[in-house]
Image (cartoon, rainbow, N blue to C red; front, top):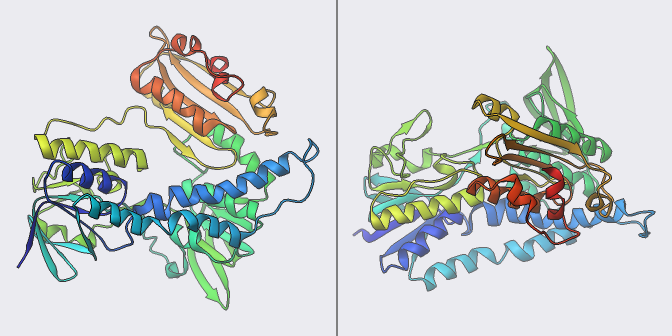
Length: 448
């Protein structure tokens, strides 16, 4: 006999938690299911554990930059201790998350959920039915379709590796490659990146990415652009990677090969056809309310919805939109204006709003300030040389159209520009704001 609920949530990450707890708080019955430990990608396999590792590597990096400036002695990373520090956060998450659901009156299940009808899923042989089903299963590493693909470790494998290999090769040039290479190199590994495109971090301003590349050279990361991996072979404990580049072929050797070539939702295990949930161009066919256009009982949020950028704050925002539409009828649509994005390299790279090409494509008239800032106090105090900014301001309205930052405080200062972009604040309003000094935010008036 099937168990019946008002809402079934498939997934247990950021969006899932938002949906499940907010719906349950209204007295409706809710069930959550996940085939992995509860917590989702961000808390267990992505943002948070990565930032825990960066906590150690950034501390060591800062100490090294301060050599000759009052700091002495060799600083090195003990990988086992750093991993234990990371696990002090991640290990308690699944039990804490499940306990939180239970205390909120939410039923919890473990196992892969697959549709067996428009309003029903099966989990580990048990049938669950509901008025509404919310898909929040995130994304998985993309299939590359190359021989030896099984030898790649993914982001989860990297964040759980017990020992740091001597030679690490990353396939791809996005967030994962950018961030993991900085962690591994500063921890003592020899790092190589193979990127099929002409540059890394294509979602960020090309000028600032170019400045950041100087840091890759400084820490000894070898980057090959225009290079497409064709085969991975394992010989003993060593991997041989064959890649095409410039019309020829190159080979590389490594002790670990990391998948950093992008992520996408994995629809196959869900058996969407059985639930009457259609895809359009490889994505869930959703209306503006994040509801399935073919099965109105189904909503989606976060990475699997593929409506906004694949970022944790977007998942949380989508979850709130879904809750509002579930409880009050379809009336709320997501707003992705002014979503900040940060690559947590050392130093971090951040952006919000439009870049130059996007502003030109929209026919906007704007002025732009762009400078490198190695002599600013906030930069010198951190003993960092690779820093700079680019800010776009619309002519006439003086609205901030976009901001692109590179430097020690970029990941925090970008939030001020996010407020401006999302809520239409002007350059004059920012310049008139008195920020605490000396801080990264106190540099903002000089960028305008």
